[in-house]
Image 1 (tube, rainbow, N blue to C red):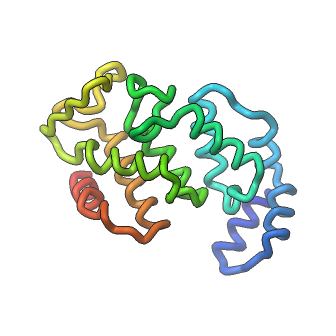
Image 2 (image 1 turned 90 degrees about the vertical axis):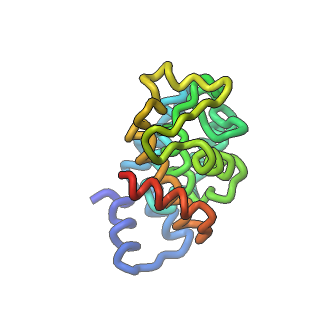
Amino acid sequence: MDAALQLKIDIDNGQTYSKDEILEKLHQSELIRELTLDFPEKPLSLVWRLICISEIPFSNLLAYTEKLVGKIYQSLSTPFGFSLSGDKRNYLPCYNAMIVSALCRLGRAKDQQVILAINWINENQPMERGQIVDLPGFRFDRFGGCFNKTPCYIGLAKSVIALQNYQNVTNEFQYQSKLLKGTEYM
């Protein structure tokens, strides 16, 4: 069994490890070895690598993960969250939400970029049908229409999950109303 999977099972069963023991297990993991073999440069590859590595407990302790998060912030951050290019013309609510969820799992929920993304979800993500979203400069229509008369279910669901992940790690409930509205809609 892979060392990272064994670590997850052990932690889920209440076993505790020192930081050194955790790092040793992570460095023994074939999965970690595969995920850190190279460093992606393309935006989609960065996002998928971030999501993959965020699923492994304590991967936030790895220097590779820190470098990956830094690259995400450098390349994909905007004043309103995350886009696939760092530009709102390529903004997709589903990717913003997936990046937020991954960063929350990595212990980065209090980072300014994550808070900006959560605020965008709270202020702009429709959680019901018929809600008109008109944000100057955003081109949601390029990707099939995230916010038509019926909001894209994928973006809505991932945004609800992002709000829940944020709430779980921060114990902050200021987005509870939006979270409940989205959960009820789903």
